[in-house]
Length: 65
Image (cartoon, rainbow, N blue to C red; front, side, top):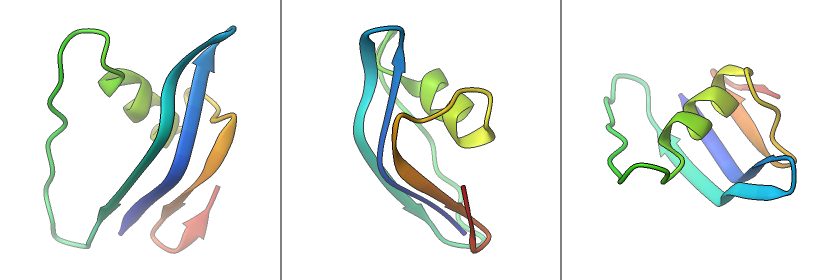
């Protein structure tokens, strides 16, 4: 299970993600679709820990970060 709650991530002063919430149940597959610069890679990098969210929370397999 993966959940994000109101994630916000920025590069310096530029907010890229603003209040992103998703919920993916065990066994589900999802896709992120959007134009260039929409924040797809930033969201994946934030979920994986490469970037740090300035606000919000991430729950992966019942473990919060």
